[in-house]
Image 1 (spheres, one colour):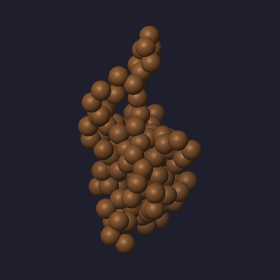
Image 2: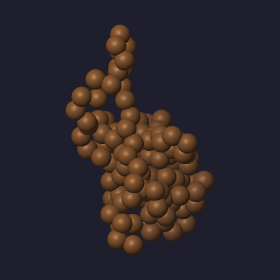
Image 3: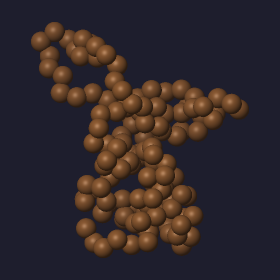
Image 4: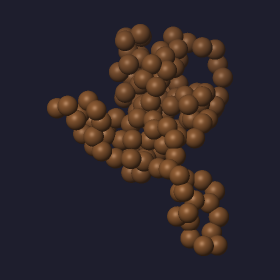
Length: 126
């Protein structure tokens, strides 16, 4: 990976501060507080470099563009919650017990993803 830049530092800081998966436009909005001249092209270019360096990981939700989270978060098993109103995605710790029991007889489970959908705390207040 190339040397660290103010833009890269602002993007990493945005992901650290949010502590949740973020879309490139969300990253831009937050990083622009530290580096006002940053643009979406720079965000995508930096995401690509951070992915290649394995400092961030993509979070794929069915039918949506990927979001990104720090590799340190992605390294431990967790799931996600997506708010129906604001589309924000949050990390959910833990895993349902007995999920392996859902696998049909004779099949072998390699991995699983679980996405919960509903309304986040902030949107529920409104």
